[in-house]
Image (cartoon, rainbow, N blue to C red; front, side, top):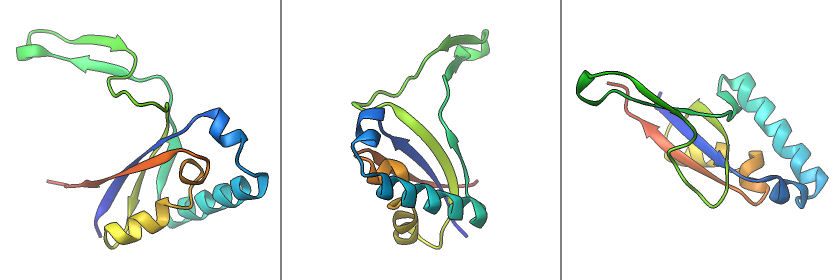
Length: 109
């Protein structure tokens, strides 16, 4: 079955202005996704890694990606196709709490 990586973007202000019952339903949906085998978590501080021309490892704390909203979390899910991945992601907290979820098909080589 195809795998998809999701990146959830959202901020506390959007989350807080979302009705409590909507947030609760979204968290319950995420719990069901986890039971289905979706690997998900909250984003922590990233580290950028570079090794130009294999000359030595350089690291820098902080994100490379930029967005109007902070990255809130990630998941790896299996779905039969993009339509199913969209249906699964559309009920998660970032999607319902004024954020956004990107879905990236994972090409396992």
